[in-house]
Amino acid sequence: MQFHATDDNFTTANNLDHIRRTENLHLGNNLLLEFGYAPEQLGSDRDRFIYRGTWQDRLLYDGRRLIQHSLNLAGMWNLESGRSEDLVLQYELRSFHRQTKRRSFFARFNAIYTKNLNSNRQVLLGGETGARAFDNRFQTGDRRLLLSLEERMYTTLHLFNLVRVDWAIFLDVGRAWQPGVDDGLQDDYLANFGLGLQFASSKSNVGRIVHVDLAFPLTNKSNPLVDSSQISVNIKTGL
Image (tube, rainbow, N blue to C red; front, top):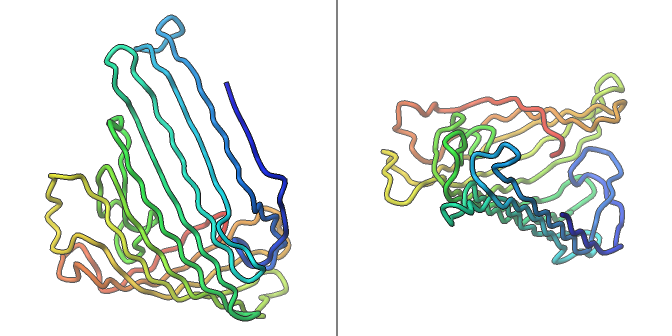
């Protein structure tokens, strides 16, 4: 069963999540709720009620500034044990401020809370999941906080008339943990700053962006698993 409600409030923007592309920007409420039932008679090991929901809205938009937030919930309810399973609750706040034609400031705050995750699922921090100066899976737990700040610079560089290049200065601060579990780190929070390059094809409609980031740790620098700097290369669907 599904319920979907959305406001008909759209506009267009540039250099928001993509490089030199016109983007459709939704400025209203958007609510999606999905419910299901997985009985043992159809192959489930337990009778379970399955649910998923997404809600997002715009807090501010004036042409130069955009603030949006969203809430996502997913999980299952075990009807036999009477408890939740694989519960994931995630909140995200995004702020975008166009300072000049070639410069903008971007901030993103993300918080995740989970409960009774299956053994194959974890909440991670480091590398691809945030805190770019640290290895993937550097911190694990059942909850996470992450703040990323970026000063983005839009250049006129267009390599071979095929690839556009932008760059950014960034700061990441975050933590993944489980209450009562000591991860052995000197500093609870991972923090780093760095410089990133973004490459996007001007001929493709896919919208993939190659990110090349050079990051330097600000915390846990004495840890033998933490290098003085780290270069990472990722392909993402946006900035």
